[in-house]
Image 1 (cartoon, rainbow, N blue to C red):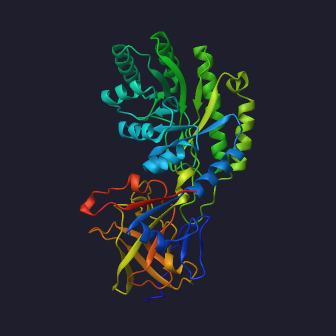
Image 2: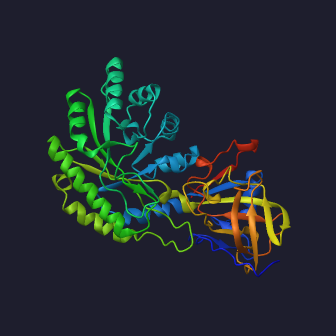
Image 3: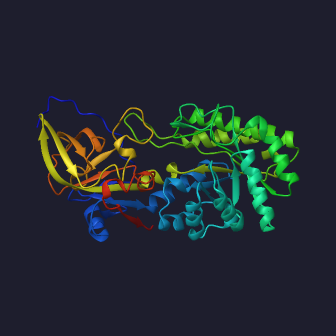
Length: 418
């Protein structure tokens, strides 16, 4: 092993994981190798619902009582997980007709489901209106289409307006506002669109204001939430009617990479309470508020397990080749929304608490140099048959990876019920 090379750091292993007396990683109190045996093989995603429940409980304790929690199911839409989440949160946010079907099957009430996303097809609009879910409108044209479809069906569409704010969430991994965007209606045009909705006899459901995601700085999050509430007040004042619901977006990030620290949720909650105390809508009591979150609720509760099938050297560098890859974990490979590739937290599951002594590249099974799950990471010595665990796999793993690439089978998924 070439120890003259310098290892590249990895992100922090989330809280809630430990080893048993033999050094095997425990997930939800169960041995990783036993979970693989139960599922049938690797690669395998494991989701621990006890960690999700704990995250939601901590969040509820930090947030004002007047703010509900919604789950953006794009983060992880496994049907069993959605059935669990339907009993944990106040609503689902979806972004396609396929997600609409999943949300309906989960048991979540239709009037607690909202449908956002540009480019909704007529059949998606029709299905949403028929189901009684709320459409978060992305344009004036989409509004006209939805009203025409509802009129033809003889029903009243439930319509909210997604607002493209003039500000964004500073420090966010993905900025959703502040300038020209494909998402939402520019704030200056929103009041006229709301009047059009009301005049057409549709049911105006409120506002969806989403400025950014994956932010870790609590002060920036609080500042954006204050701006969001002020904008909602301005729109309501221009329209002359209070919105039934204001979805203030989410934006809470999770610590994937070296140097990342968890969001100070207590600070976010206290500052949100202060901003609500200054909001006319919050004070009149006619408007409800919701925070829409995806990865913050589920990312740290997921682990991706994959087995080493080969160990080799190339030009003096060591490679552990696993039976998984970016077709299951695109984000961990650095090919999903990151400019500079950085390492997710990773370990040898059957030597979880062993000293890390060897620098190794963890490469997937795909025929592309992009398929690298660990870049020069410092781990215990890797051997064929070892289980590799990649953390932060509960969000944007199986649901956001090119599963059909090169014809490899989909990863198994196992839900650990609390």
